[in-house]
Length: 62
Image (cartoon, rainbow, N blue to C red):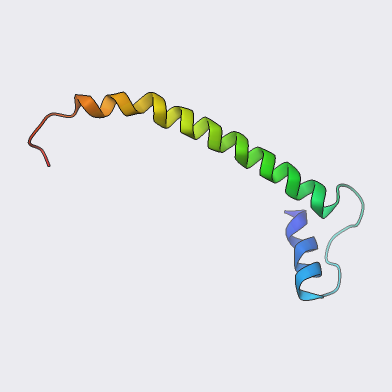
């Protein structure tokens, strides 16, 4: 990710290792957070949908 290079520059004070054109570090971080939030919601819904299947497990197999 390009923002990894930007973060490395800011945190470690090293020379800039990526282009300064395009989205800023903050913009890219915000977009990543939004994407992760979408995935979290999707996975929570999937887990919720699958949870009733646990009741189908035969007893005594533990």
